[in-house]
Image (cartoon, rainbow, N blue to C red; front, side, top):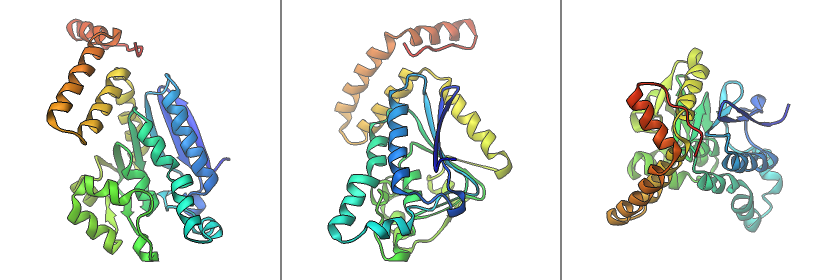
Length: 260
């Protein structure tokens, strides 16, 4: 079996990190496959939602330290390893305007936590634990933690978590806003599927427009954001899916969306 598996079913693309023997620590070939999977999902009209999860009892333990050490031969090499290779995933995430869900089924440490933070929504199993962890091995958060975490929990708490490397359990993650939902371990896969299916059943153009507007509005002023959303509304209002949604609402039936 591959170290990273990509499948599509019922509108849901699943990226499975599949090295359970090492807590799904990722290698450089996995990073290539991960970025390719995200790009494939972005280009596939049959994909409406993307879920990232791990095999076994972990989400991701970050980069495989042996693989990193083998190629980290100096400052320029380290810079290149991150900017040109590991950060491929973050850039592919930035280009994905479809919902991206992190299904954190277990431990997420270091870059593993960062990979979850860069997703739109995080669903945690009750046994999941998360830690930035880099400082424990003398490093700075290398995969976006300094960018994503303060935007979710605020600067003070983010710095505390990055300075200490402390673990956050699932309930604390929910309290801090890191986790959208926490589910019992024995129902986790079922609940993730139900959540993703609920998103996949929504009008796909509208889902994408909402995501674009939300992220773009976060970095601009109110007038620009309002002008942007007026344009998005004009486009969405003209779609067949919008007409179908309105008709289904009036007729009290379940709508069927075609992405048009």
